[in-house]
Structures are given as C-alpha cells and as structure tokens.
Image (cartoon, rainbow, N blue to C red):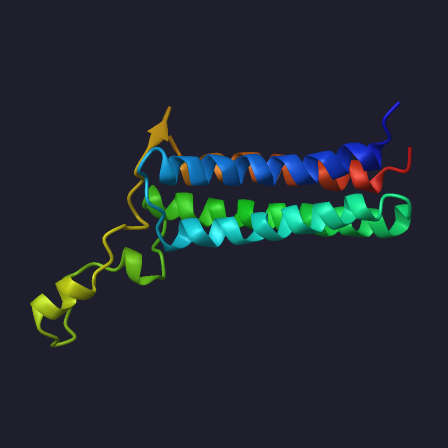
Length: 159
C-alpha cells in the first residue's frame, strides 16, 4: 500500500515533468515558440522537479521529504498562478506588464522603425494554440493548480 507522502512525491515529480515535456515538445516539435510569460511558467516547474527529486532522495527521512514535497507543491501552484495571469492577458481580461504585450503605437517620440525592430516576435497577449477555447497557459493553470493542490493535500495527510 502506497502512503500519501509517496503519492505526493510522485505527483510532485511527474506533473511538472509532464507539463515541461509538453511545453518543450510544443516548442521543438510543434514549432510554438514561447513568449516571455511562457518562460515564467516553466521556471517553477523546473524548481518543482529538482525539489521533488530531492524529496525522493530523502524518502527515508519522512519529515524532510514531506517538507520538500510541500515546497514542490507550492512551486507547482506558483506556475499555475502565473498561468492564470498569462491566460487572462491572452483573453484580454487584463493588461500584461511586459514588452511582449505592449502596443506598438505610442507617444514616446522614438522612431517608429526603431520601435518595430525592438518589438518581440512572440506576443504574450495572443494565444498561439488553443483547444476548446483554452490556451496552453490556461491548461497549465488548470493542471498546475489542481496538481499542486493535490500534492499539498496528500503531503499534509499523515496516513
């Protein structure tokens, strides 16, 4: 019988690894290049994978392993929060605050050609792909929030 902590460790490792595999696969195989906010969503998943691996290494010390799993779960939730923000920018629910969401027209007095040359090719406020109206950022938000919550719930149960 598998303990709740062991289940939480596996989810904390496999969920961000699968989401990263999907993101990298869509980039290198599918040709969907990430914007700045896409990269922001990946960073907590990289951290979660590393922390989850450390939790496996400390499996014989359950209190330490549990603490690491909780940290990994929190990192997964952070990625989900960034995914919510990014999806909101894509759906135009709110304004993004990076250069990849800035409108080219504006009154800075800078030469328009110079502004065009500085404009990133991949925009954060346009979904490159969606399924059923849900963008990749939206899917990351859904899976990360549900998965991170599951990790925290399992890690907080003793048996």
